[in-house]
Length: 298
Length: 290
Image (tube, rainbow over all chains, first blue to last red; front, side):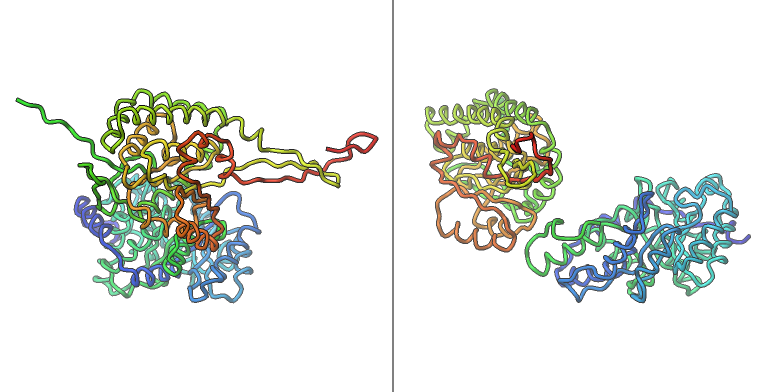
């Protein structure tokens, strides 16, 4: 298969870190900040992926997604709700015709340690329940063993099963070891049909970072320059502060450009980020620093 | 060759660390040849974040353990006596005054250490009610407290407001005396050596008038202690706190710096009363109740 032999370019780790250091040191002016906060809210995949998820919790999260904050009706709603396959039906019903999408993790999330049959069934279950987007995990074990064909085949099989639903491929970069490996996995996912590439499951301590995201964005950029096709990006896990979210947006604009600055092409996988964005927005509006006591519990 | 004396850099104290102010600003207290950080509202904001994070665990310590830690502060301070005295002298106290202020401060830490496991018994109550309920009231810490130290004192004032807040399970951001800030920084070093968890006490130096409007507007600060008698300031603070229901306590500097600075009511001021209605059956055939 052509893609397996394809050589991903090596990543200059020192250069990437230096670039990130410069992005994060930049100051953000207040009107830009306000626009950035609104944009970030519109890009959130509001997520709950717990063993303890109940119908009630998912319903509550869906309500939050639709009615983020009564005091600021100008704020957009989040992009999607991200849940386990068994909760897709509940979420779909709760969201109704709000236009907010339902994303479901699938393929033996979060470890991916299962057979292809089981993964397909998992995906089918999510789709049958009405999922608009599927977040699959790659088999990191196979990837680390060098079985790139296996990983690529798996992604393209799931992509086929997805039909019209958009497929996000989770690389779980915290388990891949190096930025070179991240680039390799990104290229494999993109060439196997991923609509989105996503950093992490959020289930291990090493989740999304700016350097990792930068490498993945570069993979997207190179693919775009080669083929003219846009691939979307979703960093997930560990992004809970507004400032960090704004840094991500700056990075996207720098590496990919304005085209990617919409929730069709960029998402944040996060649970507590929404409240921090709201608090920062309220701070910008009122001039007073906010307290989590006055915002919903997530 | 003559040795160059190494002088101390006076920094602020946030979350168990000694950063410089993020603003990079400094000022020179009148008559003293040192640079002192002029903290910004962002320093204050950062301090609130760490104070909020540290508060539940501090309140969750046993009262006895909080007492041990406050007593430890007194112990460590005793060992630093000479440094405090020389700083007080540098800021205009006589040798005798400095000696007395350090003595009074150490004694005050011991005094409040003693109250840590006692104020709850004194101020809690079982209340008579006309229904089948066991009704009781207990004190709970307010949470994050901000406090401005008395301007006239470098050590005793700030020590008292810190002790009264943390004895009752609060975390605190203290704004040091603007004209006499040196001892507050050395006090921070003492706190850092005394098992006070990082973030429970944060100490900023700088301009009170600049910081107070931001402090009183901050939604995540539960109470504000103002030491001083400027009526205009007090009215202003009370008006601005109306939006966020912050408790405003104001003490006269004399009260804090004299013997009347020793009172468990200072601890009570920074606590809230929680009353619980616990359903019970009538106790005893005669219908007597709690």
